[in-house]
Length: 511
Figure 1 (cartoon, one colour):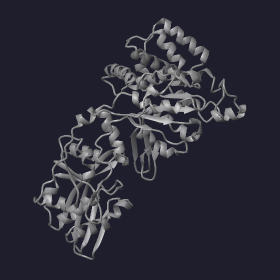
Figure 2 (cartoon, helix red, strand yellow):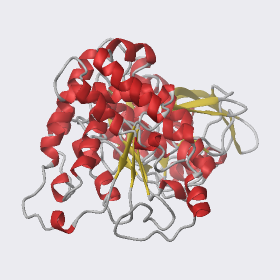
Figure 3 (cartoon, helix red, strand yellow):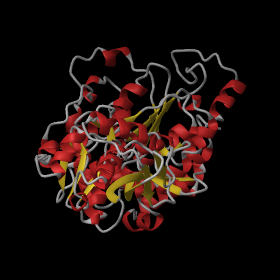
Figure 4 (cartoon, helix red, strand yellow):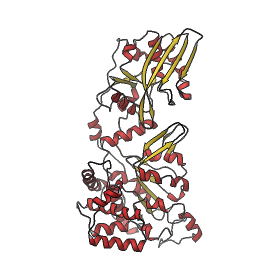
């Protein structure tokens, strides 16, 4: 007796179809799973056996062989429990085989027959739609997530008997329906706001420029100057996620299992702030079973590295490739997996180990060697990949006592969103979304400057000793500042402001 059930598994953040073949023949009672199953898949036989018996069905006392095809890709996870159980019941003629062939099925089984949630239901629903299946059966907790995919019926199931009764025609499972437009129309509330930050107007301006163009930024200042406070409020001025960005971000969170219960979509831009003790695999991704790292979890959002110089130097160096390529490729002997990693890097650090170097109100207690060792953890090539360098001085007492609130995030976000719309129109026929992603060819096309700007930039390059990458960074920033002003051409005021955001090139902090 042979039965086939269609399921799916995740490779990277995309899903591929898996055919679960169940063969039951006479012989000694055994349950064998083949097709490169990992430990969690091999253990399925115990869960499947108990779930079938405790649901009131007979488990066959014969030789059972389960094949997971394609057999050349390792299978991991618990989502094959439900397909295996249904395959066994189909092979024993309890449910009709032809009914199973129209659906893609996934779910983990508990010993009493309840269906538990699994990871990656959104990419699996997308794979089912592309393959032309009628519907997909998922655990009820994954129903809203999978229902984001239109033109496919999503059936949320609670128990194994419920699914069996559905395929036998004795019961209906109402398909899950969600209103995607309503999810995006729902106001995004945040407890953080730039109106709470007193002083630091030039830093707020730099953050606005960074948000408008998707630029990376580093803040250097003494302890207590507000670097972390400002960074945590950056997402409040970023433009809202588009539907495509939301789908891509949700796929990553779904694969990792970080979606909240009954959450359909990630509608807020991610903000990830890993501790400085993180490993390179935790930051970039990897492991025995590769999974996304913090740079991918920050995709379409912000990766905040506080106390940058406290991170291990090898960990910081692995950031260079994703900052350039906007993706991370993890290579293994059997396969290579690519995760998206288009994020804004925001870093904060003290100017020295004690934190008070160049602070007029505190005396620095660090020696020259300590300062040099402290700064050497951050390489020149990494600093070159950060567009804006901003000094954050201590806030004067008079600024803290100002009663009038500062400009709220909502007003800043309006200007940022208007600048992003101009960039969307400019790059409508390309694969980039903001000025920070422009290539050298696009910089020459959209970052044209007049003679006065050329003279100003030439002088800055000669005096500061800027690299070619820093030169391109300045043009990108100037293009963003012009977009904030609503101007199509780049003026000298835009270029001069952009040059001011390259303080580390002037050798004040890193020499």
